[in-house]
Image 1: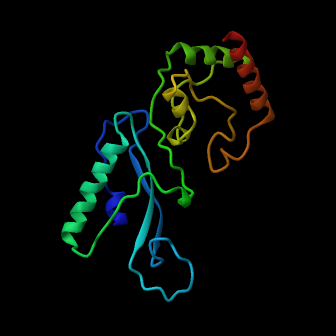
Image 2: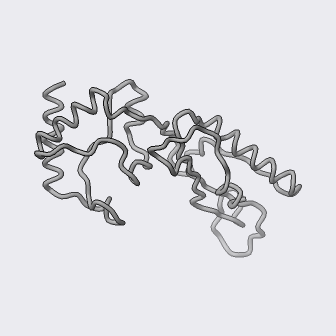
Image 3: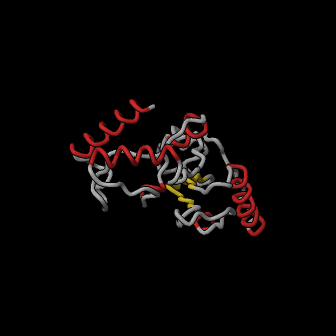
Length: 192
């Protein structure tokens, strides 16, 4: 089943700035521990498996279209294997302690007045024009701009950067970068 999900073609319009999307990651598979993932003893006979998946998707796709794609693929597996029964838990129950909110994808035009205002203040604070547009791989991550956009609040993603690339890029940010961001945030607040 995990292989079927990892190779599943999710229907939706591609985004050229985010070429890896849509992306379905089977992050965990727990088997032989029952529906409630009982962790006692190795003597439990496997009768139930749980897969946890994270799906990153493009604009135009919705949880409903993704669920339909998942059901279509899993129904095909179930037709070939009469012993296979599946259920999809969406959203996940609170006791799973997993992210339950859907972060809907959206894009902000680099030419939007808000983005241009942020870019103007970044250039003034650091003395050079910033790169404006999607930055990969961090562009694939979820963040609160999704919720701000849904509430009608103009937004874009801007903040201090760590290492330019590699595994440490999220582990630190320089004091200089944090000071630049503080100046930009102050200038934005003063202008709004």
